[in-house]
Image (cartoon, rainbow, N blue to C red):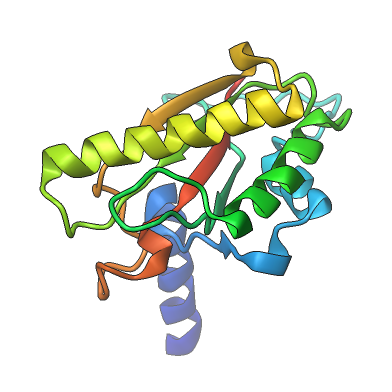
Length: 178
């Protein structure tokens, strides 16, 4: 009986955790495929039913944006794309043109590790997000109005135990709500 109540408590704690506290998967190398990106970036649709559900004094469910974190590499202290990053972004460009994603707008978030100062990391992460946006616009004819570049600095580390881990120098693409 105690085991059931412990398991129930764990489930409740996990459900109460904010979305950003839960583990984020970072797509790397061969994991960056058109189908993986379409699956990650397509917002979940609610199940339509004919029933009415009345909730008292409870706010509606928060919108959880669909997103894909990718390990897009940059040279140290630079916003220049590496050849490997360009290959990954070519896959992203093709995915964004597919029918399932063609109607959506996306935020491109650039992230940095904390090795530079806060101001430097903010500028660097913004430049990286702009570089990704410009690459997708120029090389894949993605409408610029569909993409917003946002620098996140070093505020959203995925690997807090190892602040200079590559996962902390990433690009995240988030589907914006319609």
